[in-house]
Image (tube, rainbow, N blue to C red; front, side, top):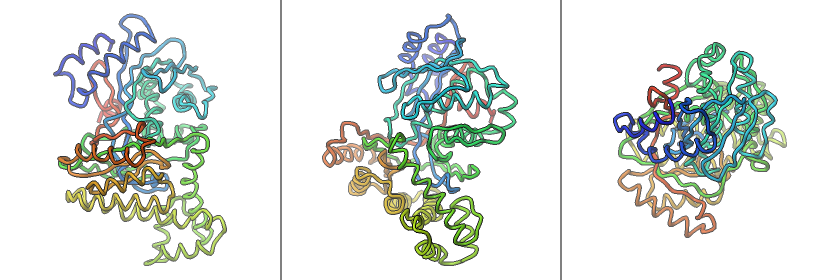
Length: 472
């Protein structure tokens, strides 16, 4: 597919599916910027892709602990144009001023720059070279992108940025046709697990790990961004990753998302705060094993083991033993970490799934708000601005609201009847401007619905990326 053929397809209404029509005005300027920055031979092959952010409806810090999440892809994210180059380089630029252009060799000696946005694409590119460079002659790529995700919003922009890099390199090199890829990555869930391992540094099957970006996270974001389906929220279970169910989002419901303007950073000191939540989970498992002579590997296994060995009232018994346990267990409130996991995984998510099936908005919202309160009390990761937004959403008539993502800033999602959503959005935005005027200029309020995962457009037209490469 060339730039001219893509322009022609976009102008043909019958060849542009509904989910791409809103982007028709965004693509031509991006193509112009790509041609200007990365001029190449006339008629060269290009690719167009869209990598969405995600909304974590339920599942606060449960994925890496072996729990479940209820997530969906957004209709906001990274729009990108890419093409192979013959220079062995990754060259990336944004059609804006937020991210300065970067250029680096596609080699295993890449040294990612922690604290700089290029850490994410460089880490992804290095992992691909380390894993596939000996079996596939990888070509460099030029990438021009634009973003509709607020930076630091907690909508998984960093994961989406890494996955955009994967999309560009994999498409240019037809990486999914390589035998090593097919032997280790068999479907969309496998691919989401591999991409998460590229981010956190772990190995995946025969594909050896590397340093990662420095975050101790799971694969929830990657599963939602890659495998999301239009009009559905995905119920996922982790360690290992399993897609349990895709639940249709009721037509009469709407999500309203608010970015607080407080960036949920994962650099320097902020990275330590984010990772502490993960470390608390690992330390809680270790303390439980010490106290109960167990061999659990996740909080899910702790909950199953404790229920089986203690029975009814096991959580209180575990909390009492932790209180009498090590000093670090008390200082880090490890019993609280277990309680939050159990509430989210065993109470709020099952109740939310029932509410979705029964189209019971009141029950769904009630559990959404309870999830927020549990995060505030037991994870200690809710910023004051997010708490203000949650309370004001309920005061303005939302059925429920909760902060989502890693915490320490970021965004919040509220649910309510679709007919009321736009008026609510305006009122919510005004209330936040009055309560936190210092943040209002950087905040963003918008309506959202569950969207499809990563999409790509080639000579055959547009398709979900997982459908294209796995032929499902």
